[in-house]
Length: 115
Image 1: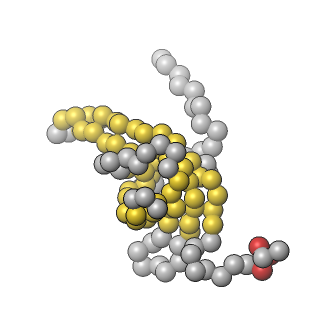
Image 2: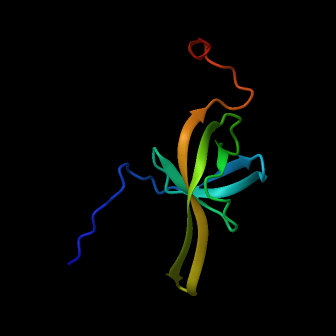
């Protein structure tokens, strides 16, 4: 029996959700995100953005006007192959590292952050 050791420092939540990712160079695009932790997440991208690109990520439910925004950096590229019932499938994406969370553009700044 083989025992695998988890190298990750923080726990992961394996949840699939949509995120809006924006960059100055590439504009805005909706993507599928999954496997989020307190330090980053995996985002499926057919054409991954360049490494070290800074992005703004917007987490928002479709029926909700509020959103959570984060600034992150493209840390890794992933090209995954896996077996499915209909044969081998592939998935490409990026690993994002969260740099900081920010208020949504246009949101009021809390008084304690003004000083």
